[in-house]
Image (tube, rainbow, N blue to C red):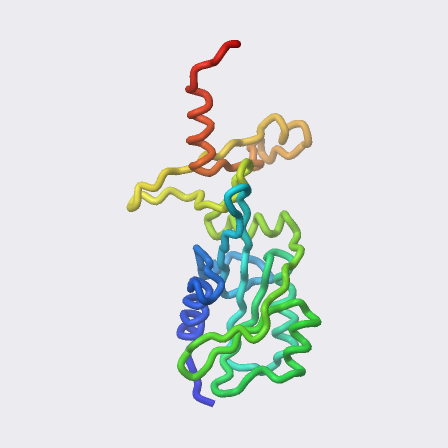
Length: 215
């Protein structure tokens, strides 16, 4: 089987995650080395909310150049269900397809399987089911990518300032009273924080500036 570079494989999966014909993730990011185990190669943020609610899914992918040690790597992928809503294992298989036994492993471990062919096209042979991640670890992974979840509308948004695009920023609030009450102050500093997205900040400002209507 032709050997393909790790970077090329990750680029192929990154493209597929962002494509409408793939998972249509609005953001696909490589994962910093500071992220602790279980550590995926790629993380996508897929907005699944609608007109009446905001919601998103964290999608992770582990990318491998072959199906070698498949069961072990599938187990590593399954561990990412602790922090993501859907998890995928992407393998370069050339002209081959995933065998029935490997599909069975994927079904049992609750992971999706992506096959990368010789043209570096991605094919989803097994869709990932919805996981039930630990809320804390899900938020931690999101934050390590520079994103946060809005406390009001529940959408994911970038909580870093982009001076190039001059994008409108959200707001962060530090829960000092709450942290002090529950003994969560560290060196007299507060780390407990909550975020509001730019839309909610703007909407709240509009409500506060609206004239009162008396009956």
